[in-house]
Length: 234
Image (cartoon, rainbow, N blue to C red; front, side):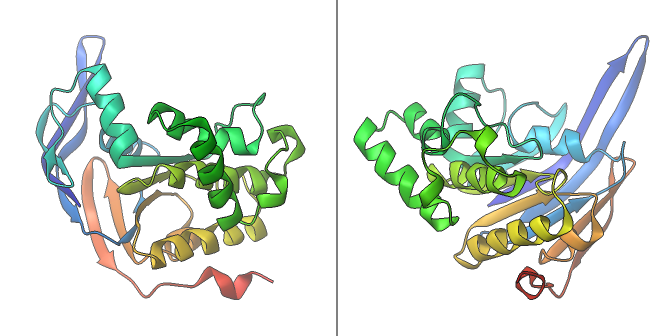
């Protein structure tokens, strides 16, 4: 599903250059649930931006579902993002003046799906995350956990090849974090490929594999025995 080969990325810092990613090599198979861990400055945000087609590597290969991701125009990158990727953010990134169903339907609008079909599909995904009855509530009427569930539904609605979750539990308390991870695990159980960037060890343990980044290189890449979030959810 994802192939990364000898990936390098540097940034200009005045007259100096900061080498952030130093020849990363790894692959993610369809249906995996992978955590990317690393301290601040390890390169995980840069890697996520490249995987999300928000930035481009200086050298190396990035292949997504058999498609080389290279030299994309802004328009093409946006098309590929909408086709291949679903994003879940720490800060939810919901549109405050749109209700839950309108937020979930947004990626379908960019896919030019007819309005009635968009509404029906968005409602289906809200039902999947347990928020059908909250479909017409605005974000400011929802709890943090509910907002993140709306964000998950929005990411899923376009049926992406890969879900990219950036610190998806970072703004949530422990109980709500585990509820969201229970949802993520259930989505993964259905065969969806999910990449979770996190600095929280307990969240990483709820994935099936952890890639540890340190100073722009992969320090360790290990498959683990997954901790099920459901045991912490009442």
